[in-house]
Picture (cartoon, rainbow, N blue to C red):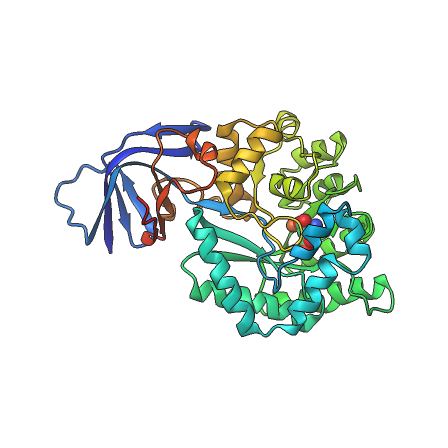
Length: 405
Ligand code: NIG
Ligand code: FE
């Protein structure tokens, strides 16, 4: 199947060779099946099966949301209202709300109910220009319910137009009915990880490495088990307090460490030294009503590659607009608009081990393309409602068209 896109105002993409964001004005893009075959081809004798008129608009790669907790059952607007009355996220968690209440709901939901609910949510992500989503388990915390969550991701991949990348996060919290914390670490390391890896249900393993949740020693143990089962590590690091998690991410060679709101400089240096992607989640800081945004500027200056993501989840961020996340990252984390664009595309692909196939408009890359009614890059975070996206292509196929335009 050959698809031709013509009447393009400009393409905006990160360019690996130039190590910069480029704006070019090709006459056309030729897509063969799901891949970009050529940009600005000159042969006149190619007959396309489908022709798409870009109507003199700008094209970018689709966004990659490299950190979400998509697989949950009920919303937690009650927690939101408690926070507005003055309770903190950690206060609510201690009194039985928070992650624990989402666990109860997920365990009561069937796989079919979860698939139907999450499939609807994915449509919201698509409308906002996201063409690949990383999704974590972590509201089950029993072998059965963690596998159920990861099987939901597998089904969503078959059902949905976009790709959902699975991460096992049994270490999201400690279940309430366990003998002791060590017995749950044993369950994760000796039963959950081997079983999930055997079933091929996850690519990554994530741990909430934070005071009150998993400490550095427990995280290290889980990382060892994950690595020996072929899962790459990610960490929720230093979200509320400096737990030394950024440093640990470097030590265990995590692919990314995320949040980093309270990380210290030595920790970030160790991440840079070990090529750990620093993922900023500024939507969470906003949604929690805090002002402790992660210092993206200093992380870049220290030498880290920065990704940005939504952290979509029922308790600390219900945002699925990557343009809004770009705006927050540039307004509050000290990074430029160019840097936030790279962070939402190419570096986000690195954070999910896919930088050879997505995140760029480049020959040989997946034809995941957004068509924008804008005049330049700055307008992406400027119009952060995402409503300037006219259409979305995934794997070369038109999957969303904004009827307002
Ligand atoms: O990334 N911090 C841990 N996990 C999520 C929140 C999950 C929840 O509150 O349900 C986060 O902020
Ligand atoms: Fe998270």
